Image (cartoon, rainbow, N blue to C red):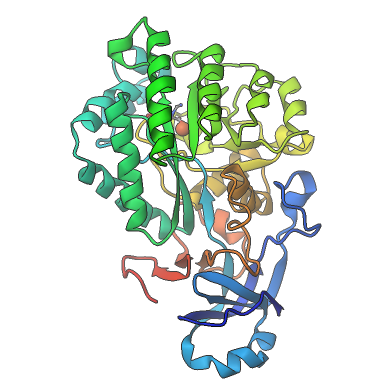
Length: 439
Ligand code: NIG
Ligand code: FE
């Protein structure tokens, strides 16, 4: 087995054996950056595999027969919980790198209006959309919001997700945005997985700033960002840069403020209309998300960079769009691509990464292997946590998903059913189906 140095003092170990396909996602070239082109198809599969985790970290990865012969393991057997994976598939826990979990109510009126033909933008203009979630968040107590987030995290973990990026963005005042970030922090403290918080104060211009978007941008830059950074409530700042939201100039101002305060940047771009991405590249964004209308010039710029293109086909599905983001054009040009749920009440109310894989395969023509690499190691790159997350390698966090399947391609194949048997989140085992933590 490939081993990291064994820790001297052990608390508790976890050994997973009899894994039919262990998808390690280890880098064949040893490179640290996101996977692109043909690299996305290299899953580093070990047949009849085993993984040993100690103290929340992966310490060795290899064949079951080698694991069972391991001298260290023989000596420490009493300190190790062994799980027989019964010939199933094990892979890195999914990294859901784009979610909006801090809201109170579903948007059922928007849902019905869309069914009868209204578009996302028409609904927003007529008083629905993002703004219709704002009052609920402003009025809610922090503990109510934290519980909502936590419930969603549990649901995600039951479907194989172990790391989640979580955005604020339905408060749209300094107080309500910071409260949303505190709710994310409080939920994170009660969940065994990993949360990456993002300030999305620039989700849409709130009603009270109508026709004064510049004043609102100043609030984001001069109050929200400095306070979120000082209180370490966010790692990233996001902007919805599109028709009906924020302009490119405003996005650059917000990115400038984020950079000044030491926060990373990411943006919702080209969801509703084309925009030029190259002016944003000087801020070294971790990710550009959606990209339905990305142009060819920007595709070739992105192919030269480590900024990840995060595709969220759940939004296209739920909005009933015929078109999906151009995954094939991006991958074939060499752009690093990731996949995320975009969990939110308006455009993508799903917590299921396996369903997103299914959409990626059937609607965007990604192969099952590409989809899995996009949602593990490239999701980790989109959050800049690839040194800890996204692959099964010694030294990384013990984040694993175990699926009732004989072949990884079954994960996108059996759509809309949950085949995840259990998940390991930083070394804690959580069973699917509501039976809670196992070990
Ligand atoms: O990613 N486009 C902006 N944000 C979300 C939608 C949020 C909402 O409609 O509530 C998205 O699709
Ligand atoms: Fe989004």
